[in-house]
Image 1 (cartoon, rainbow, N blue to C red):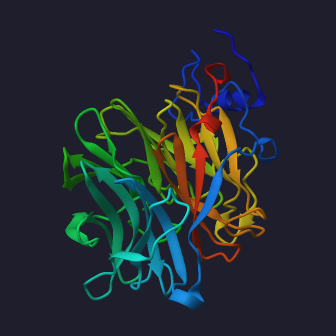
Image 2: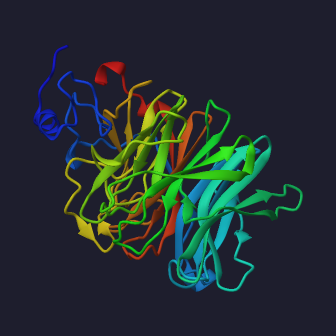
Image 3: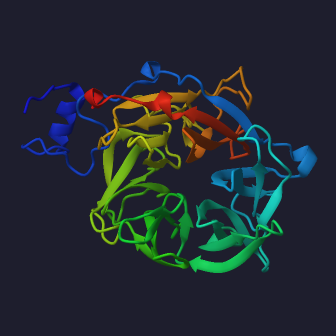
Length: 402
């Protein structure tokens, strides 16, 4: 086996990310064959269509805060939902609202509500969708007061009335869903998320996954990803499923702008200890998966030189990028720029330092739909909800590039 030795490769060899036989260790997300691209080297995707899902217009509807866009194609309609608050983030007035598009995300109908909490001091916020066997499910993070007792509640869309029927609390012990449930070959579904068990800056918020009891989507087992006891992260995570092997990719914490990774080889039941990967990533929720082309992908803000660009929410959350592997490749080899913070061509907000964060994707008819928050440079997640539609053909990279 021939090695092409680069500075990045040497650093990984020294740190022990590759053993003496050249086998890849658990922390490897980016291919050793090339260094991670710098921001100036990342090409901008062509053919991307941008739309605004929900404009921030507090003077019109009273909502101050919006975050956590989720998307789903269901019965040839595109659904979007998000956490919405007339007050401050993580307060009891949070509610789950959404909109529907019948023209491929070009325009959006009126605001609908999934739940605003029917108990005193109960908030219901952002989460994930799943369209399965003709039914549209929503799994939403909820809590009491100011982020106390985080849990996950399930809802089912009533197609006849357009209302959302409650299926109750399906996960407790702090689990907040972050990624759409993915079906596994053992007959269960796996849903990525975070276990919120302590305040910001504490080591008690690890990544976690929920595993269903077959197709009963009201029963789930919580599995917490093991990590060093003193490691401080905010473990919002996504998973990549390949047979019985699952990769969990988690965000870090302020001052540690790297993706963290853990591997399961038994359908998510047990996991390797979480460790820092070799892929720099800003401290924001990532979204990952596998495209129909066989390519692994990761949406967020990744580049070799992202660290040190501090804004009001830690590491800067721009540009919005997507890293991809070759078809059936194990490691990311190419990064594309979806859009920058300053984006005068629009539509969508354009401002220096704008945070483009908390992405969520769904694939449909040869295109990848990417929903994301845009704070317009305001900070504090005072966001609008926006959409980028990417032709899959623009994301192709060859096997020779691995």
